[in-house]
Length: 251
Image 1 (cartoon, rainbow, N blue to C red):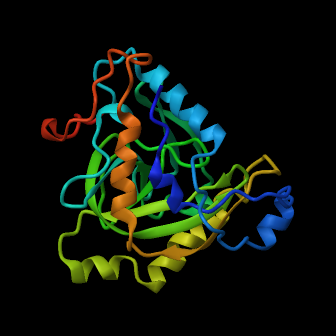
Image 2 (image 1 turned 180 degrees about the vertical axis):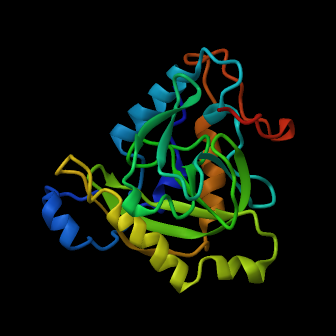
């Protein structure tokens, strides 16, 4: 059996028990954060199993084989969308490569940060945990190893969708300035608006607040256990190996 304990997912909010408000209601008001779930929801468990199955044909796989968290507390983010880009690219786990999803309206001005995912993780929405990279210009397909600045709590039509914010800046004083109140407003403003012009009327997103890094690393480190396959699945999968270093960038 696959290990389905992805403790990093507990950084997210709990799943709502009642039916979600309409898209129009969500665009008017953002729900407050709720306590995190105790364990991974069934849909995320299923997504984890599917991800391993999709990755099994690749000897070296970006999501499966790249360490998520390092001994010094830094976190790896695979960049899907560079800062300033209007091209929304997503990593296809089965194909082990980036693919263009869509182009966002020019009126949004491009993504306010680098955008990607943290390898070896699955969040409560069934997707790899999202990462935002600030203070850099990493291109699409690059693996960025950075210091965690905080968490942006966000919800969309699929459910809770929080994002970990990282930077490659080594100076602690400069790191704090990269996510000051003004930057938080700028970043949140984009994510509050970026689905408003979608053709899908049920598509929405809103940022409900920000969290700090306290208690993050123990949860994220535990998330690495999700990438250790059993003999019943993905027998050719390569387990996490900190000594091997990150994988080469994939375009």
